[in-house]
Image 1 (tube, rainbow, N blue to C red):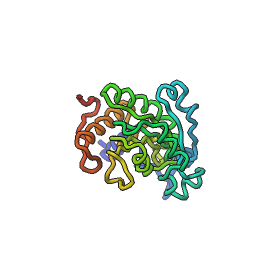
Image 2 (image 1 turned 180 degrees about the vertical axis):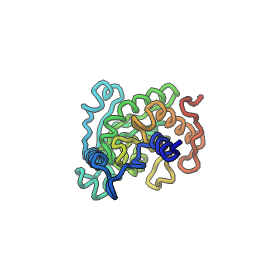
Image 3 (image 1 turned 90 degrees about the horizontal axis):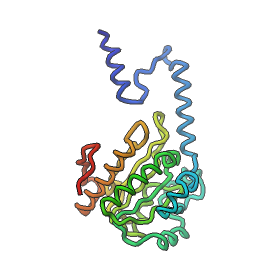
Image 4 (image 1 turned 90 degrees about the vertical axis):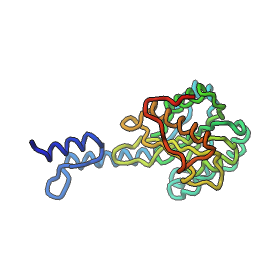
Length: 251
C-alpha cells in the first residue's frame, strides 16, 4: 500500500486548499498555476462586485420584508478599501432614515452588508435572509425592518445598535475572498450592540457558502446562538455553540 498516496487522497478530500500541489522543479505545474491565477481573479472580482437591491433580492422579497438600503460614509469602493473606518460609520442622512423607518427596540434586527465580498451577499444573502425570517417568525421573535448597508464593515453594527436598540442584531456580511472561495458569507451576532462594543462582544457563524456551511444549517445555528444570547443577556466570548447540526433548537 502506498501510504503517502493514501494520505494525500485523505487530505485532499477534507479541504479545498491546495495541498500536495504537483510541481515541476520548484514551480507549480502549468495547469495548477493557471488555476491559481483564475482563483485570484475570481477573488478580486468578488471584492469589486456590486449589489443591486432590486435585482439581487427581488421585488417580492423587498415588498414582503420592507427592505430598503442605506450607505456608510465611504463614497465608493476604493475609499471603502483604503479607509476602513468610514465603513464603520453611517452616512449622516441615512442615520435619520433608519430611525424613521425601523421599529425601535425590536427583539431581532437583521442587517445586510456587502463587506469585502458583495458577491457573497448576492448569492448567499437572499436564501439565508428568507430562512432566518421564517425561523424567527416561527419562534415568536418580534422582527425589525431589515435593510442593506452599502460599503459596510462589521463595526457598523455598533452605530446601528445605538439608533435602533435591538435586543439581538444579526449582520450578514461578505467575507474577505480567498483562493478557495470568493463567495463566502458571515453572520455576526451582537447582544444590544452599542458604540462601546468590539469583536469580543460578538458571535460569528462563518464560511456560509455552497461548499461550506449550508443555508439551512447556518440559519439554525444563527437562531440558536441568538436564543442563547437572549437567555444569557450577553454575547461574545462567554456564549458557546451547543447545537447539534441539523437539529433545530426547542422553544
